[in-house]
Image (cartoon, rainbow, N blue to C red; front, side):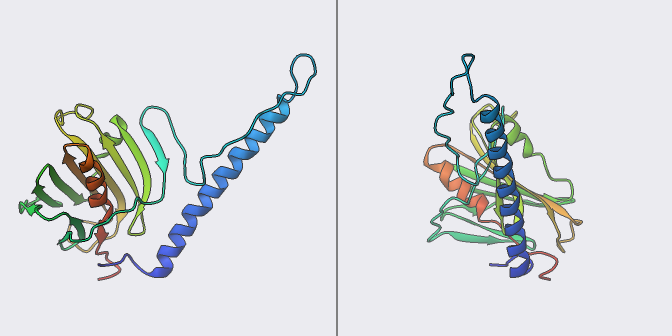
Length: 217
């Protein structure tokens, strides 16, 4: 598989992610300590126990409406899967998934069909519509091939135009590419599926993306 830029760049990127997460966790614990100190006594002057403090670990955060979290990659067993390669990226999919040979105009597109799922992607300067999936459902901040990415899921009917299928999608911005689609480009890749066990398969498909970047030439 093609690897993004250099090992040093990947290490620097991951170190930056970890540094931001440690800083956010330290700030949260500091605010908690101030709150406990300010509210450490009740109206009678008696000490009030704050109780045990449980943290969700170094990678968990959340917001209202669509859920936004950061997490380490899920374990994916892709033994026996096939690899689909284009001029700009590759990804893996289970046996039985077939390339439909889609053609784009100003972006690189792909369409692939298998039993119970359909994989589509759009890689270009103006990609980004899949962010609507995260607004309607859930979203997860992840790292894919050294790039910041957003993994999203939605149930049937949550995203306009997708009333009967579950969706697993990923958006990756800021990818330098020599694929003739303009640069930097962004990737939208999504899988329509039947839910259940297919949800894990769909996540493994989008997480398997590997970019052929301009630096690799």
